[in-house]
Image 1 (cartoon, rainbow, N blue to C red):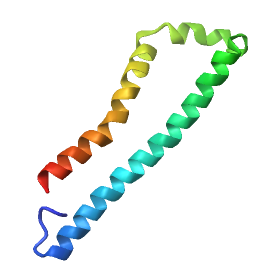
Image 2 (spheres, one colour; image 1 turned 180 degrees about the horizontal axis):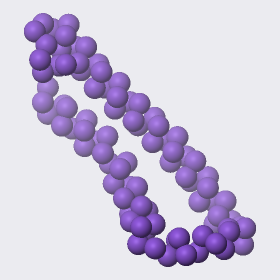
Image 3 (tube, rainbow, N blue to C red; image 1 turned 60 degrees about the vertical axis):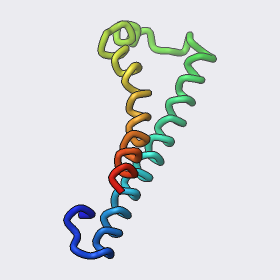
Image 4 (cartoon, rainbow, N blue to C red; image 1 turned 120 degrees about the horizontal axis):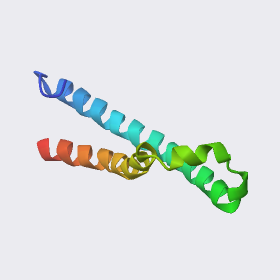
Length: 88
């Protein structure tokens, strides 16, 4: 939208859409992070309450990859905002 706009109002609309999407992404990730921290805190405080059936899941490469990739996904909005600000 911003790149193909023929006037300033169209460019501003495109920039506002991009900023709105980044803000939405940050807010939803903040909610997810809060819920994940609450869950991790509950598991840490009472490890005996964790279902033993999930032990096999937590030992898989897929689960460990998820745990490794989660912080990378939190870096993504920062990276996108840098790219957008570099283009403007």
